[in-house]
Amino acid sequence: MLYETVFILTPVLSDVQMKEAVEKFSKVLADNGAQIVNTEEWGLRKLAYPIQKKSTGFYCFLEFDAPTDTVKKLETAYRRDERVLRFLTFRQDKYAAEYAAKRRNLKAQKPEVANTEAKED
Image (cartoon, rainbow, N blue to C red):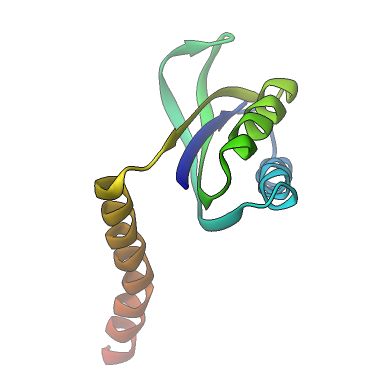
């Protein structure tokens, strides 16, 4: 089954600590039989409302293919980690999977377009 998860990390972390947290959750998935399809770090963004007296947070996105019980283990890891402010995990239906594939393809093409424009100058 294909899943997506977005989690928000506390803004007091350094870039290194944020990347360590993302690696930790990726490892939880890999250890439980999941295959990570896509990882995106959206960076520091303003929250819609304060969470634990914080108005910003590091947003991270993981897309993965995993057995159903893996999601429970991932969410348990989120709850045990004090760096996580919020998280949301959901299963993709066929339309969401198609949209995600198109989005990944567009993301993969963008750096190539930027490189060709730089070469033309």
